[in-house]
Amino acid sequence: MLLAFLFFATALLYACAGFGGGSTYNALLVLNNTDYRFIPLVSLICNIIVVTGGVWHFSRSGHIRISRILPWVTLSVPMAWLGGYIAISEKVFVGLLGSALFISGIRMLLFEKPAASDQGEKPADLAQSIYVPPAIGAALGLLAGVTGIGGGIFLAPILHFLRWGNAKEIAGICSLFILVNSVAGLIGQGMKLGGESLFLQALSSHWALFPSVFLGGQVGSILGASLIKTKYVKIATAILILYVSAQLLYRFFAE
Image (tube, rainbow, N blue to C red):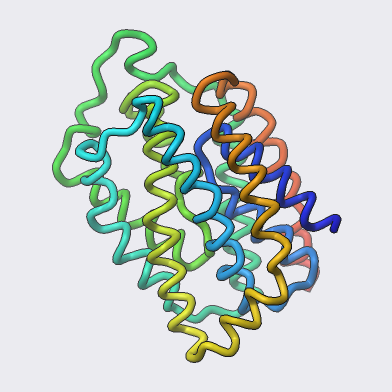
């Protein structure tokens, strides 16, 4: 029940900013001593549940334009599948996840330049390049697939740096980016297990987490799309990320 509550709170907080929460779901499962083969599967399913609601709410609010996200997902989706299919050891998984979380948490705490539409500025030239978005998307997709996250938590600061759009638009594109990468990564992770029995075992032993993140994600998506300022959500999310990354890195170096 405690784990279900933590997943609910994580989904609510992350959904406000357009994220799925996969990074923190992973960390919570690692700290709960879950079989590491199941961790990416459970996290990606939770991601899909949360960001599906986020995509719906941000889309209804007019914050998602498919044509603008296509350059970012063209290569990220196949790379997310490949990352999910790659087999890594538990120690490497914990170290990679902890390092990625630490970097993203520090980045989120830094004061970012306001988004383009918020200040009437044009996006940076790199954001308009035909090469940069696919290349960044591919790298983030691979990282997302390997670690069992959606990659939006890494994409968001890049889009802010490039002045790609306003805060709501960036939250919206991150929701969609996470959704497609999570589906691709889930397929790769499922194929890696090599059978339906382990996949079904992962689902049946963690079923209570799925309705928890659904409820938290719905509430967070509604608040994030219309009511809550993303600045404060970012600060709270960054603190949470740094806490769980510290736990993971301690575990990595202690072993």
